Amino acid sequence: MASHIMKPFKLALIPLLAPSVALAWFSNPEVNEIKAVSHDSFQICFNEPFKNEKLIYSLEFEVTDGKAFSHGGYFKQLLAKNKNDLCSSQIRLYDYFDRGNSTPKELRKILPQIGLSSFEAITIKVATSQGQTSLTKTQPDEMIFEQRLLTRPQQK
Image (tube, rainbow, N blue to C red; front, side, top):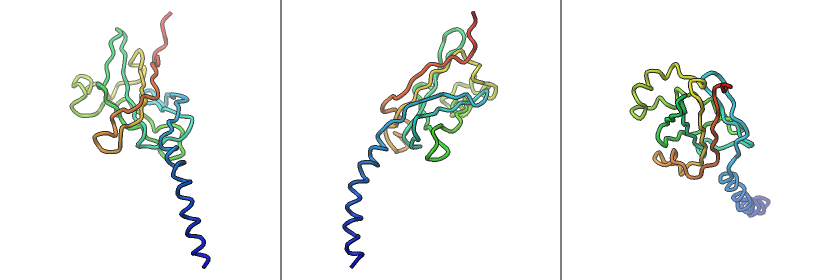
């Protein structure tokens, strides 16, 4: 008899939990900090933990003559080591650009030597992902962060 009374109670919790789960999925964390981890990698830190399949990032690099190059709208999934992390896993420049035919051959040759200070500035964009299929998980839906970071000391 006690189990009969508990069943309606358990079912009544499902509608209460669904909005909180949906709210957690659709709310976007805010970027708090970009941290240099080493000469060729950094982390993006947020105000709250984020879901691994939800956020993506892209990078654009500016060299000393003011020219910029990027992967032409290429976004990559932003990952965390565990679900409670506020910071992403390390983002290495080499890993971002080492992606087959879309990386120019001359850039592929120098990738192992590239570091954050190899560029005048790096623009980092973070967006929500359009979906969960292999075709849409790296397509941006809503841009939630964009910032140009100077990576070399400025000359006076």
